[in-house]
Every structure is written in C-alpha cells, then in structure tokens.
Amino acid sequence: MGRMTLELEGVSRRFGGLEALRGITLRVPEGARRAIIGPNGAGKTTLFNVITGELAPSTGRIRLFGRDVTRLAAHRRAAMGLGRTFQITNLFSRLTVEENVLLALQALSPRKYAMVRPLRRDAALLRRARSLLEPAGLWEKHATEVRALSYGEQRQLEVLLALAGRPRVLLLDEPAAGLSPGERREMARFIKGLDASLTILLIEHDMDVAFEVVETITVLHLGSVVAEGSTEAVRADPAVQEIYLGTVEARGAR
Amino acid sequence: MTPGGWPLGRWRSRTAAAAVLAALAGLPLVAPTYYLHLLTLTFCYGIMAMSLDLLVGYTGLSSLGHAAYFGVAGYTAGVLATRYAIGFWPALTLALAAAVIVAALFGLLAIRATGPYFLIITLALGQIIWGLAYRWVSMTGGDNGLRGIPRPLLGPGLHLAEIRPFYYFALIVTALAAGAMSLLTLSPFGLTLRGVRESESRMRALGYNVWLHKYLAFVIAGAFSGLGGALYAYYNGFVSPADVSLVASANALLMVVLGGSGTLWGSMVGAALLVFLQNLISGITQRWLTILGAILVLSVLYAPQGIVGAARALAARAAPRPESRRAPVPTAEPHP
Image (cartoon, rainbow over all chains, first blue to last red; front, side, top):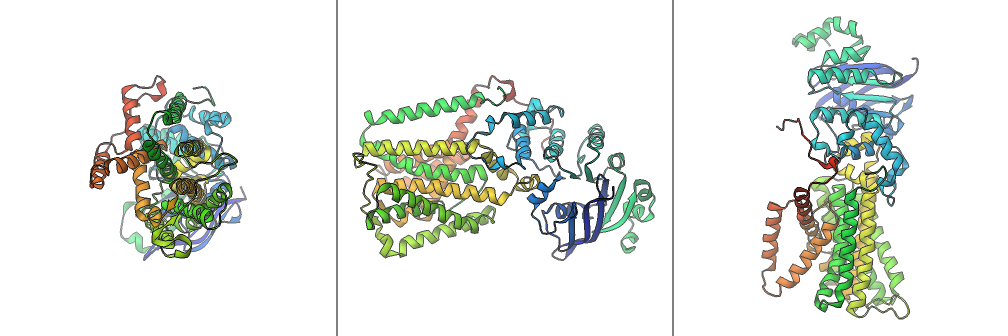
C-alpha cells in the first residue's frame, strides 16, 4: 500500500470571489477506499472536477500514479486510468443503452477514429457490450433510449460506463443519490464487491452507504479538509459532529 | 439481430435508398428538362445540407457559415477554369483542397466556442469569405460574379455540356457523397459525434478528446460542402457573392431543419423542398418567401423533427417493429 495513486498538494480553486477549495492536501494510496463527506457547498464536486481535469486548480499540484497531471487534459487523465461518475446523471440520453456502453468501451481504443467500417460489424465489441450489460440486468433494454430508463437504471448505467474502460481509480459522485433504500443497499454492495485493487473515492451523503464501502473518510467544510481518518475516528470527531449539527461556531473553529 | 449483423431497419433503409436511386436514374426518360435542372440544383445544395447535418444533427454544432466552404470551392473551381483554363479533374481537386484548408483554419477558431457563440463565430467567418468574394474584384469579379465557367470535360468524349449527362454525373457524385456520409454516421467515429452532441463532459471523462472529434467533423463537413459547391459552379456556370452570403448559409440550415436534423437523408429532402418551392412558387407569386415562412412555422409547430423525422415517427407508430427490443418500455420514472 506504499504507492500513492493520487496526491493533491495545496490545491485551491477560486470562482471569482468564492474560494471553493482552499489548500487541499490529500494522499490516497493504491487500493484505498476513501469517502469525501461534508455539507452542501463544501467543495466535494469541485474537488472531483479538479482531480479529473474538468476544472483547472487555481494553485497547487495534482499527481496521478506519481505523475504530475496538474496541466493535463481531462481525456488524457481518463486514458491513464481515471474513471468517474457524475452526481447529476450524465449519460448520452438520446442514444440507446447499448450505444452508451459502446462509447464507453471504445473510448480508449484508436478504433474510435475509424470512419468507414460500420460499428455494427465489430462483433467482438458488441459482445463486450453485452457481457457488461447482462450481469446488470440491462441487456433486455439495450435498444432503449437511455432517457426512457427508470432513474434507478440510469444510476446503474452511470456506474457501468465509468467501469467499462477498466479504470484504476474510480471517483464516484453520490452514486446512490435519489435511490430507494433497497437500491442504495444494492449499490453499496456492488461498489464493495468491485476489484480490491481499484482505488475508490466516494462522495456520499448517505452515511450507511459510505460506512459500508470505505475504510477512511476525509471531511470537507467550506473548501478545506477539517478531519481525516478511519470511519470511527471521524464519527467521533467533535469538529465533524459540530459541522453536521450545523452550529455556527464550527465555522470559526478553523 | 445476429451478433455483428445489421438490424432489420438498415436493410429497409438500404432498399429504400436503392429504390430512390433507381427512380432518379430513370427520371430523365420521362421528366421535362426543367425538373432535371431543379433536381441537379437540389443535388448540389443537398450535398451541402447533408454535410451541415453532420455538424448540426450529429455533432450538435449549429453553424451559420456553412456556405463559406461551398463558395470557396465554387469560386476556386470557377477561377481556375475561367482564368487559368485548368481542366475539370485538377480544378476539382484544388477546389476541394481549398475548402478543406479554409475549414481547417476556421475550425481552429470556431471549435472552442459552444452554443450561440459557435453560431456567431461561424457566421462571422462566413462573412469573411463573402467579403473576399465581394471585394477581391480582380479575382472573383466582385458583385458581378464569375461568369462563363465551362461545363466539365470528364475525359475524351465525355463532355457534360447537355443537361442529361450532367444530371447523371451529379446523381453519381451525390450518391457517392451521400453514401460516404452515411457510412461515416454508422462508423465508430459517427457514434462519437452523437456522444459529443449528448454530453461533452461525459465524453471527456471517458477519455475522448472532444475538441479533436468536433474539429474532424468540422473539416469533413467543410470538404463535402465544397464538393457541393464545385459541382454547383460547374453546373450553373456562374458563381456570385450571393452563393456565399449569410442567406445561403441560413438556407442550408433551413434545409437541414425542414428535412429533419440528425437524419442525414432529411437534408436532401429539405434541399429538394426549398429548391422546388423557390422555383415553382416564385413563378406564380412574388411572395414565395411568405409561403416559405408559413411552411417553416407549420413545420416547427407540427413536425419539429422535420419531414423525415416526422415520417419516421409516424411509421413507427403505425407498424411497431416485430422485434421485441423495439417495444415500448415501461418507465418507473416519475416525470417532474
């Protein structure tokens, strides 16, 4: 576990006068399961966007697998093995379920630039799409446009797309958001059952899901890391309790 | 559907395409010359409109300057043929190269912009070409246009001076161009364009260089638009600033929208509609633009997916596909 998969050093991000992230330092070792928690507006999703390259940090450095990626484009980070899901379902809604998965599968292959040979002739790729959809129970709907799926199915597909490229780090942005209690437990079990070598960063409001999946927790508040440690330690941390109870004094504590 | 096979729908659309092609090939035997003239114009504009649909309907880029590449190729072919007496094939090659080069340069400037900004920047770039056509009088003839572009001599004994041979030549070029663009939409690259249309951020997260995909689509669309323009110049024998104007670009966009964006073939239908309406109705009344406006309003109200889009929706409703995979899916989603 010595090798660091992801390292952030003093990462800040400003939106005009708002400092959404303030000097975040984060070290995530290989194979770790880490939750990022914090109240609304703490900067969790901004943190994900900075890690994936969707947003550039205002200051600080980001290293992925030991390589400085601070100025690297989002798609290049994805090619290095960084996968993510989105808090607000972000799928190709007017494409079919199968086409969504095909896009995810061919993303890292040079075949994505092929312009003459029809996609449908690539039997191997179609089989891979099927083998990804079948265990998830979505194969029956492979020809359905994604916008016609139920919300639960869309959240499922959201995770499937991120996994299709076989990432080595997976950032999950509230994968269980909006799901029923039963679906949440299912999602938690599914994430827990993923390959142990996969490093996972999870943003989650539902503590039952978070505690089921992760060993360590980082607590963000107003753009800063206020606590970090094992799930028990963080739960017992008075500062964290104050933030979650919503007392005003907690803001002045740091 | 067998793994790797074509879904039934593809066979149907291929049969339909073959039938249309056969009908168009047989038409000169029965139709008056005037209709062949209108159809040849439809082919030229249709190639441009289809290439614009690659941007608008597939990639989600609404360009309002697509006549620029049509005009650049048309003028290049015209200048080479009239001022330098260069033969058809080399002039056509250079005309296409000019369209590609201009699209490649303009793409560098335009692709980073999105939504309305892309629309405005393509409009401005298109106006540059219009300005050149209008002001570079020594080369383009300015406001008077470029006259006397000779009908092409394809090879020994293959002179396209008459309407019928030119019609067949245009039909072949159009079929090849439409086939190539259709193949592009079915390719892995074609799927990435629709992915870009649906969600750029998801494409990036999956590992796609979204800029490059949009740029390639832009240049390819420019090349095909140029093919339409060169064909037009040789057919019409005359190009003028009106062919590269904002109105020409807006007409191309209108063809795409009327025919049904994202359907590719719809753009050819839209081109036919515009060419025939303009020529047939303007013979009857001065107010053909009013009629066009009314048609546009009705189409937006009652067939927002365009003619081909609406026809497809009707066909789907009338005859549900035999395959169960096309069956309507019960959705548990409570629509807010």
